Length: 370
Image (cartoon, rainbow, N blue to C red; front, side, top):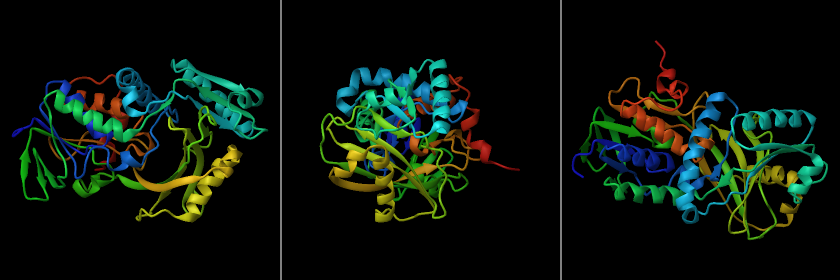
């Protein structure tokens, strides 16, 4: 393709989904990446498909996207290691149980099946949990996938729809209607969509996307030992300590029988090395809910940088100062869940259509101050 209508910079799961959505609306799309599909943040993530409800607009975006996921997985689930394991949000005390009851009510009211469980019912639902927990919420429709496989599949779908891809092509600069590659090649298009995660500030310095480091670990294979994704009710709410580290257990059963263990976050950390101290805190948090994990063999650990924003909402929409330039970035830990919803909103905005939910909470213009 010599003259695309739209260039999408970044072939992670969000960028690839945006490229497919735009191509499906009749735009000729070129998807660029400095590496290959799903090689960056997408490769490091847990791959949960979960409805989070810390705000109404967050839940709106999650539910919009999860409905797209249902359609996608009906056709492609086997190709992307999909497992509809559901989520158990675990409450360790009465305060967390009250928050769990509110979550169950909010999700059920929006049509996302959720039920409040007593401590006894929680133990029955997930025998691997430690005794004495206060209760929790079971969300049956939540799932897990392998995100790099989704990104690769979406890149293939793009070309099947008539779009084009260009990989191993690092972008050095973006201007109105063009991208400049490090190789010196300039590619012009009517619109440019920047979906490059933590690399956004290097291309668009005014946009406040910053890296939030996380550690993950995966066990050997223990088939049948864990039925649900198990998440602490403190997930996403745990405040960072004096060392800048926040930890809240998130443990997934993978289709391989392995356990994928998260979750933690650190700001202001530039290096990507595994920190044994942080990894230890992560594992202790998970073992506190699932004691048998202490006897399991960890076969690999790694880190990833989540692209975050100051207010915790992604950037979806028109760049406030650069004409014909759009953003789809800053999703932090919800990029996989919200990829398809983001793509629908972004494609509607680029094509001049009204999105299915209010896009204003995600507008990049919210960070512009006169």
